[in-house]
Image 1 (cartoon, rainbow, N blue to C red):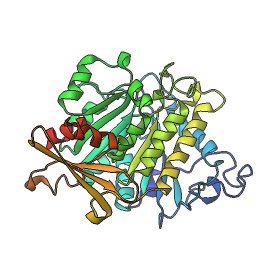
Image 2: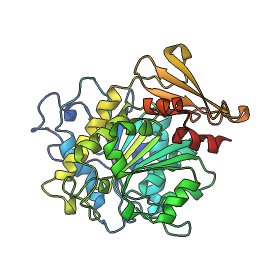
Image 3: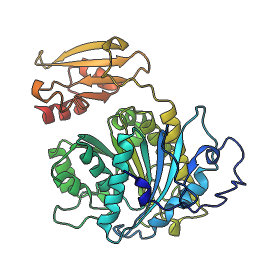
Length: 391
């Protein structure tokens, strides 16, 4: 499939000369689609950057379609990390005649990149594009976990039209369904209906309040390590750090915390796509939010460069194995600790006839704290939620 038909060249400062870009910066190494008819080769590419100029379904934040090139202006002036990364910038997907046309283009492009084992980095645009990103996995027949960094759930009602604040219900209700788990990181209670909190619990989805995440930032690593797709709403960052959003709030993550979360995503062997949404240059101050988004992408790339490739579907001799019995030996939890990275997983019992279907999901990323919880004969919450889904 020729995906170049969906793209237009990028329009950023110094596209041809990079006069501000001294040697060693990302702008020197990226295969950039800057000239019509000169689409970059995807051979031996690790990461592909995609701009999506679509904001018709952005709720109270029109103008996000202008953000992809604004982010690029800052991204390509940043220096490379320690490793040599192979990146292509495929240009921008413009909004289609109808919103469904844009979704179809994103779905088609992401699907082809995933087949080629290339990680798409989507520069939105509005966050409802996450729905199109999800549909790409459906076309591959792959059951996935989604993690959203957001100040609310973006759930919406089943009968409600899709918007940037109401797309999750479309994913949940879509048939055939390929969603195993959804996790929200950083929700703020005063932005969330309590009925939505109860629904998330009934679905055995995970939700972590902003205060908990900020106090336990290291615990975000196993949460993000379990994601196939990560969707980052820039409005989850506090207004003082990211003013470029009409829905910005005084509270939220600090810029450094946002970068750390995204770096965890880069480190995850499981994660295969990521999107950054709702950055609006109309409300930005001196390019501050565009600059922060660029640095977040840099941290994702840095994490990718440092992947350990130790997801435990390989030989078990590379792991230390621990067995913990709890509830008077009613349950046994098997933990694995990687000898290479020191990271932890726990195995959830899975019926034999479902093991091939859920082979990527019954080994659940966890932390040393989960192991300590089990030693106290207490059930780790994330083990129990997955157990409920598999039994």
